[in-house]
Image (cartoon, rainbow, N blue to C red; front, side, top):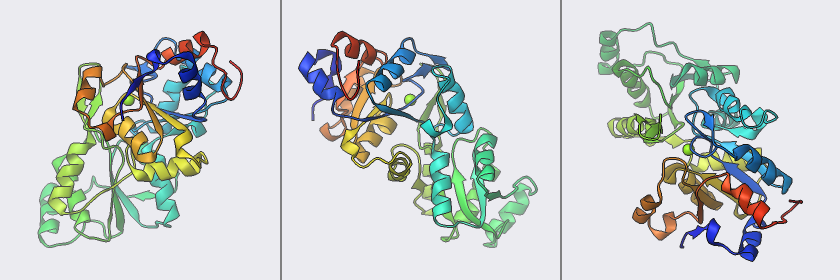
Length: 309
Ligand SMILES: [Mg+2]
């Protein structure tokens, strides 16, 4: 499949494009804002899409500040947005654990905000502070566990990650009954346009290799997140969904995996030349310079979709 530049479509092709989806799923960082500052024109674009009858929701892999953190960023753009409009992997993990009636304890490598989200949802977490490393090594050597009630280990972004925590995670995963759950699987977390933090992907791979276990993923581009979103937003026909994102590995791959249409924006981590390394089945359907350009396209071409322009 070849990628199309939305700016090069003629008026009837644009009308056809805008009429081909009812739901917009949108990544946040790199699409709506950069370094926590909203990109010029995104507010108008959101309201134009809604005026066209589109349902718009926001899908972020960022669990580090909880749902509220993403919502706070969105409120700089539209203060009427609700928690219901936001999806982060923690929600998909909670939904899954509830679905399987999980009643054991969790060991979590994540931020305090993520832990709070899990506790607020009714789950118990183990306390890892009360054991020293030598004691932990002895437990590992003798094939025991520090906490026998652990039923699942969750890995996400943890800026207080330590060797001791990784060892403890590994000890629990030696029991095949203990679930291995991962939120975000990003390789790099953008701090600015040129600076990136190490993403959870590296730790996930290390733990997979050391334990011979395969993780269950709940962030973009996983099928578990797709299931959660489909149920949450009652999406019956994925081909009528447009996923807008700036990352090829998370956003565009997620859209392709889910059977959504995909639109790459160039305001974030991906540059046009990055597309050269992609095979045809990894290619986004469309690209555009920025999310805000959609507003101009709709208004300049007097696009009429499900509603009025
Ligand atoms: Mg992004």
